[in-house]
Length: 197
Image (cartoon, rainbow, N blue to C red; front, side, top):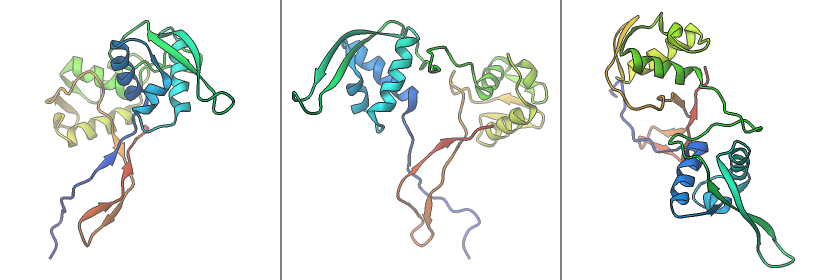
């Protein structure tokens, strides 16, 4: 008879996203000026996605264009190379709209900040500790997920922060993968996506 719970090893490919781009940019900027191509070369995404983020950073006042040159052979594949440098260096990646304005904290980020500040809390009161409207259902599901993985300890609705993992809010991810029960392995690779409330 098979055990009730099988332990498997799962390898995920997690997209780099803006946080990944930002860490690359901070690293490149320590050495001097840099280009969008240099950022894209260190990621697994298209250059257009990187350039979109760089455009928003520039509009938002986080970067400045130092120089514009062209790359490629004359007449073929000529593309402008924009050389940047940072003007602002926050440790966390700026999340910006297309117009360069900052995006407000998500509900889960607000909940995590409230949990870290309160240390011990009643989950029913948690939405009231947040700066903007957070739905009680969102708070409940986030608290359950954090308790299930050991970040919080307690019994509904009273919890205590057991494991302060840092200022960035823990994310709840979901993924789809193909599992081979014969060999007890995951076939191929999967991309994890954040669960939306």
